[in-house]
Image 1: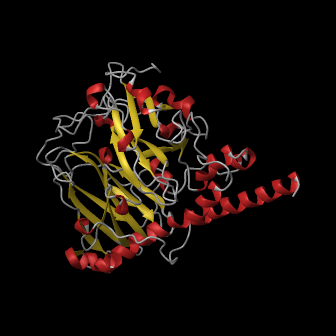
Image 2: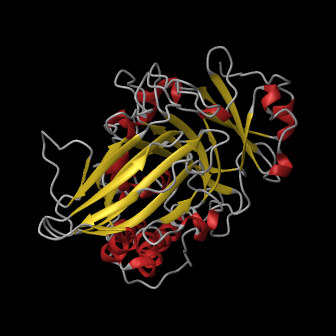
Image 3: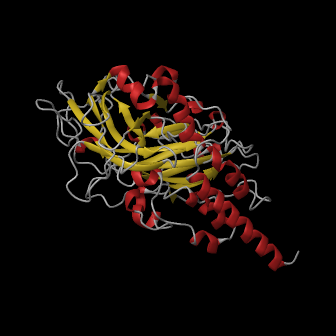
Length: 471
C-alpha cells in the first residue's frame, strides 16, 4: 500500500476511534457488563450505594482513594422533591451533585461552603468557621426544575428537567479518629411525589424513589458500563496506532492533559502518533463529569511507563517535582477552617487505562513533605524498586506504581492523575483555569509537576534529604 493509501486508512481508523469514544460517553444502558461491578456492601443501604476509593475492584467512578462517594437514584415527577437532612462531617470537604445516569453527565453541583446551615448550627467548611462545632445540621432540596441563570434557591440541587437522576454525595479525608463518614452517618431523605401527596420517609421513601435495594447495583452498573467499559475497544485501538512502540503514548518528559470530556481522552494518542490535525478536531467543551469538575474538581492526566529511562530492564522510577498550592490542614482535627489557601484539596493518583478507571494508589497534599518554598519531590515506583531515600524522613513522598499497569497487558504502564479541588477566587494557577488544551504549563507554571525517569541507584545518589535538582 502506498503512502497515500496508508494515510487514508489511518485517517479512517482515527475517525472510527473518535466515534467510539463519543458514543461510549453517551451510551444507553443495556450493554452486557464486561466487568462485574458491585458497590461496597458495607457502605450500601436501601437508598445509598457506597463507592469507596479502595480496593481497586470497587473504586470505579472514583478516581481518588481519599474520596468516599455514595450514589442514589431519584425519580422526580414534575413538582416532586426530595428533602435531605444531614450533618456536616468532620472532614476536608464534601460535595453534592446530580447526574444524568444514562449519559453520565453532570447536571448540577453544590459545594459545601455554599450550603446554609440550619438555625443554630455552623457550616464548618466556611473560611474561618469553627471546624469542631457540635451543632452542624443542614438540609437540601432536590428538584426536577432547571437551575435559573440567576436567583437559584438556596440549598437546592436541580436535575434540569430530568425526571430520573443519580444523586452523588462525596466525602474527602475525614479527620483522624473519625470514621470514614466523618462521624456524620448517611443523609436521611424525605420524598414528596407532588405537593398534593403526603411526604414519605425511611424505607417508604427509599422504595418510592428507586424500588429499594434491588435497583442499587443495576444503577451502579449502568453508570459504570455505559461509560468506562464501553471505552475499552477505543483504548486498544488507540494504543495500536503505534504498534512498534512498547511505551506509547507515554513520553520521557511527560505531558499533562486536562480532562475536558471523554472524547478528548484520545488526544495524547493522536498527538504522539503524529495525527495532530485529527487531535485539533476534538471537542474542547467541558462535558460529562468535567461539567461538574469545572466548578468542583478539575483533573489532568499523564500517561507514564517505567520502561522509559536509563535502566534497560525497565526497573526505572519516575521522579516528579513541583510546587504545592496552599491547602488547609485538617487531618489532625484543626480548630478553624483556614481560608488563606489556594485550593481546598490537591492529590496525585496512579490509575490504569481510562477504559477501566481503577485507581491503585494516591497521595494527597498533607501526605507530601515540603521544603521551605513548598517544593516537593514524589517518587513513583514498584515497591521492589523503591529507592532507600524515597521516604518522608528524606523529604520525599513515595507513590506505589501498582502491579496492574494499564490493565491490558502492559504492566509497566500507568496513568497519573492530578486533582485540583475548589480553587480560591484569587488563585489563577489551577486546572479549572485551563481553557485551551496544551496550555497547562502556561496556566499552572511551577504548580504543574515536572518529571524525569531515573534508575533507583541514581535517585539514591541524591542523598538524604534528596536534592531537588530542578529547583
